[in-house]
Structures are given as C-alpha cells and as structure tokens.
Length: 127
Image (cartoon, rainbow, N blue to C red):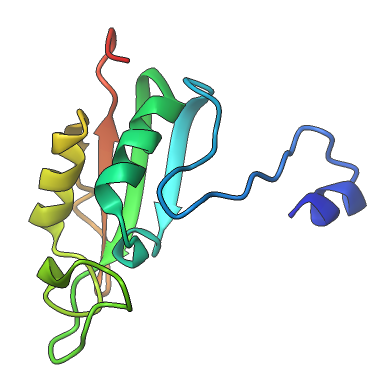
C-alpha cells in the first residue's frame, strides 16, 4: 500500500499492518473505519473489537460488510466455531461489537447478494 501511495504521489496515506489481536492504529485517530469481508476471518474478534473501539474517535463510525455463513462449510482455521460456517451471522456480529461498546446504527435495506452491511457508532464520551 505504501509503495502504491508513493507511486501516486499521495502523501496523506500511511500503511499500518494490523496484528492478529489489534489494529495497531493510534488511539482515537479515526473518524470512521470500513471493513469488507474481513470480520469472519478474525481469530480473536473480541480483542480486535476492543482495538477498533479504541482507534475510533468518540462518535466515530464502523461499517462492516460481511457475508452470511455458507451452509455446509467450516469457519476459516482458528476462527471461533460459533460462526455456523464460512461467514458471519449478522446478529452475532451485532452482539460481539456491542460487547466492545459499539452501538448498532443501521443496516442498509437495499443490499444485494449474500453480503450484508452493518454500521456502528462509538458513543460520544466513551474511551
């Protein structure tokens, strides 16, 4: 990513490699975070959720696009077994992020395919 930014002469992009349990982003550095087809691969989602919460500014938004579990499949290696297959149940995602302090805001109604989108907020005044 950093080399792509340099090639485009984009000086406002910094690549940060996330860890297995943390975003590695500075505290309260983000107005919003967007994750697509990532959450169902997290091996330690509770720790990552706390890190996401810490990385957002109060009032910041988290948008997660993920897929419903595919029948007859197994979660990726190391992922909690409560997923019901390769994917992430929508209500379980809501529950896990709520446990980290997030408020569920909305689910766009006109989302197509086997994916869904959920938007969460870090409540103002929360650290």
